[in-house]
Length: 151
Image: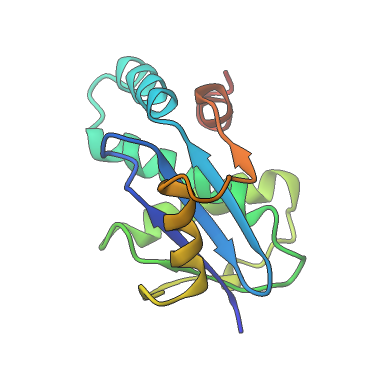
C-alpha cells in the first residue's frame, strides 16, 4: 500500500495548516498561521504580478517536500487532491525540490488521488490540527522561503 498525504486546513485559510504522511507510521508537519502569513507576505511582495494562487501552490509544494523527503527510498505516495487542476504544477515544483538532494528520485512514485475521511492519515492530520496530538515538525516561514527563494 502506498503512503498517503492529507492536509488539514488549506494553506490559504486562516489558522494553522497540518500535513500528514502515513502508511504503517505517521509523520506530521504543522505550519502555524503566523508563519504562513509571513511567508505569503514575503512571496507576494517579491513576486509582484504573481497571482495569490501561485504563492499558495508553491507553499503547498514546499510543505509536501518536507513530508516526502521522509519517505523510505523507492516508496510510492498518494497525495490527496487539494488543489484540483493544479496537480502538475505542484508535482513539478515538488520534484524540482526533491531532485536537489536526490537526483534519482522516481517521479512515478508520486501520484494524486482521493485519500478519504476515514483514512489514518486524515485522522492524524485532524488530531494535530485540533491540538489533540503534537506535530513531528513545526515549519517556520524561513523553512518555507528557503526552498522557494533561498532566504
